[in-house]
Amino acid sequence: MEYILVTWPESQELMDQDWFNECILMNDENNLNEFGSSAFFVPKERFEQLIK
Image (cartoon, rainbow, N blue to C red; front, side, top):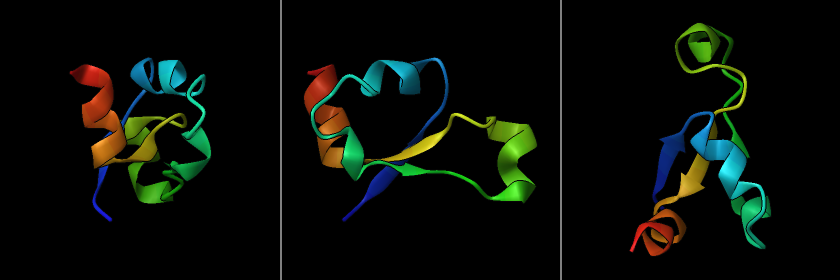
């Protein structure tokens, strides 16, 4: 499965989706400063369905 990284505030909007449990929190300490603490790896297919 292919994932894309979605950062806040867009990630907040995804939390209301029924499939949000398929998302994975990005918790790599080296990247927290760059992406923030609310960045999620989101299945690419799910994300693309939302933006259509």
